[in-house]
Image (cartoon, each protein chain N blue to C red):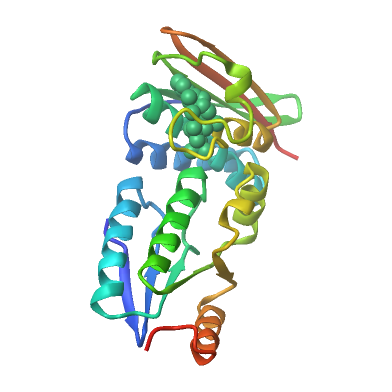
Length: 133
Length: 125
Ligand SMILES: Nc1ncnc2c1ncn2[C@@H]1O[C@H](COP(=O)(O)OP(=O)(O)OP(=O)(O)O)[C@@H](O)[C@H]1O
Ligand SMILES: [Mg+2]
């Protein structure tokens, strides 16, 4: 059984691919169809940020089985320019580009757990988990 | 992957596909704007039923299409935002971003909305 999938993302086609992979992994764990959409949407935002700001990076999807608890963790990691002010980046409507500035704060709302670390010139890592109900 | 655009009387219907990439969406925008002029269309229906996700980028692009279509003198209706997609959009904070764009449950309702507006004289001849 697949536990961990690692995918390099560098194009918009890769974004679609990771969404499909995440749906498959989450479905195996018994997530509801509406949760699958929430996970795919959060992932789409994180993967798009990688392509847009870091040009390339990777997504690691892991199934979690802890006792009777089931969950899926998304790690989105790149070695791009990093984020100067994470607090601002997490605000609704803050964008350094021409986006709506909803990707990061929206992904946080869509998932149950969300951590972001970033340092200028080093890159950015987001780790987010959703638990099946 | 090219989005199919159907011509239905004075309206254009674009059916967005599941694996639609960002560049496909941008291509759709260009084609629609050109066809609205060529056919003097009164309305454009964007059917998003097949989309697996409506993220920030897709919402921004569809809104952009609606605004540009409006500048070309036609009205846009988005149809087929499924329940779970609607819920995800609300959580993302995207719901208010589509305000100003007409939405309908299905094609039939979208056609009815456009027909009504045209009867009320809000469309080009
Ligand atoms: N992986 C990343 N590397 C570098 N900067 C990033 C990364 N992800 C996000 N950012 C920065 O954080 C800001 C906020 O990101 P967020 O995804 O919330 O909004 P956006 O991408 O600008 O717009 P939207 O996602 O709504 O289209 C971005 O404008 C960008 O400056
Ligand atoms: Mg973003």
